[in-house]
Amino acid sequence: MKRAWFLPVLFVLCGSVLAARLISQGSPGGAVAYLLLFLLLAGACSPLLFPRSIGALDAQDRSAADGRPIIFWRPGCTYCLRLRIRLGHRARQAYWVNIWRDPAGAAAVRAANGGNETVPTVVVAGRPHTNPDPAWVREQLSASA
Image (cartoon, rainbow, N blue to C red):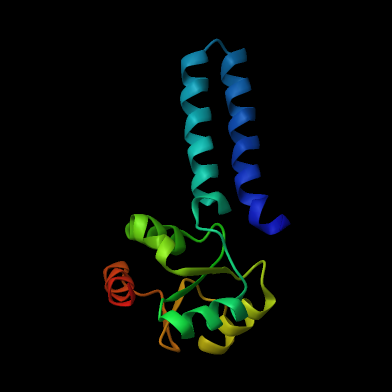
């Protein structure tokens, strides 16, 4: 849990320190701009942007029943963020597994990627695909709907 929030909290703290310094130098407009930038970065790296994660075993059971993809991810991963943004509202159709919160998910990703925790790893019909094209994932989501 701590690792998931480390980067967003760091962004907020850095933005706050920079904003306080700019305010003390007489530049409140710049302070607001930088603080907003750092808050946006914190939001983009936080687990809040992603659909609610479930456990890997539960995701595998559900995927076997309805054919929807499983997306293994971790907070702070720019490739995961890119996939999430490009999927848009369809992202909620997939099962998301945060590998930092689920040891079974991390083990599944390591097994699929030669011992590396490379994310996003998308599992469709039992076959893992590492860092796939978001358009391909959208097609898989449409096919399973």
